[in-house]
Image (cartoon, rainbow over the protein chains, first blue to last red):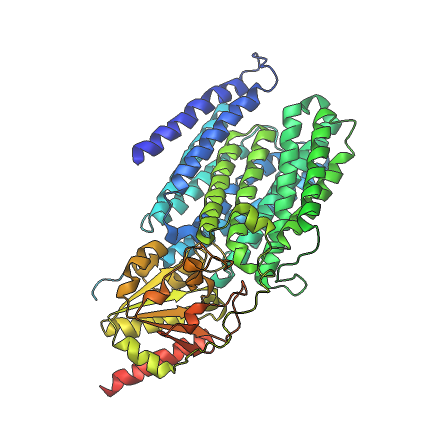
Length: 128
Length: 467
């Protein structure tokens, strides 16, 4: 199991590394769409990993799973921060700020409620 | 250097997200998953903050503080309201994706048209269509679940519904394709696509009823994740792509599990408007039901060795889970083995019953999945059905004319005795007669689930005291 995770994680890493390197090196002028193909690789591998990991999640925990993935997809904060923060016309900043508010709400409520629910799952207490 | 640091932060965050989900495979390690997710998110945000060129710190801080302030109360809702909170959260996720896509498009349109390559424009179109339809669709779903007055609970159907819905989506996609080829000249199409996506979101959830909510919520979960993926393509950010893909695949797997548990296909759930179709006269004419008093049922349960409780959405509506816990205590104290049979689609979202029973402090090893409990049903002395209906209807096994034929069910009818708690004899959500109630070994306990279970507990404890 652990090897499975590690090896598939490694695979995504191997795919991501050249893309990251490419993004940093301004001297290479990639042909249009090259970035997209790289990202498509990452997307495909991440989806496979997601399928593998999620299908092993205990059925008991499907509700907390959904709130945890809500929180994880609040990763949109990253995109929203960039839009809000950079020097753009003010209406763009405003759109970004609303998006940032929405994803931050998801982030906070997602993690908090997941933990609150998981705390309730207890095995049989000791004794009878 | 700084860019490399950001990428490394993103890389570690991706790994931690995978571990977070991996640890959800067991309730004992699940909380570790939350910690791992929080650390990952912290690294991602910290990494983004050191991005060069960020100047509007005031706006960022304001949005973060307001988001935090709104998020905390949303995490404290009662557990019966978790489905609508989840739907609301999908709506926010979709909104964020839609707004970021909109902002990027207009930014590039005005400042650097050369960046609107075909690939990137296609990604923006995917992002806004998915984002905005998830936004309105999830708001509708949340409204239905919260039972807001002006949102119809029952499925709303009208002639040519599917055709008109799909053509809306089709027009949006055609506009999108046109925009990919002429991202500047046809800029006026952009708001049209937004409007169509918003409208489609509303219209595609309107015909869907309560019992199909677990599937729809899972599907919207998937869309919310995929809109984050599209955002990642637009911003060329791999962390958004990986995290979004994890969310998207999670939603997809849950939807598949839900569909299988109802023996229905995606298309059937989305286009089949359950609940209005069955005008078929009830075949129950002439059959009689037997009712039992809580005292009598309590006495039988007390003498059992295995009692299987089958909870459904009715238990959540009546808020009966804490009474159920008292019943569990009373019976366990007398040496009765009490187990809970959980159907995958019981409730309004995947895993809903488990969370409610865990809240009532019922140990999770007593919550048994459908396939496992069905092995034990013939040995059960009593099956106690609390607010469940279609998931225990034996017609699903043997009556090909039944709308739920083929749906896997919990075999409550195989227990030696069956007690069903029900308000009235009105058929359940799907409008289907449940022949379980007319079976020889079934006795009805008519009334509110919370009150009836309370009565069961009362007569058990009174009985206990006389010994």
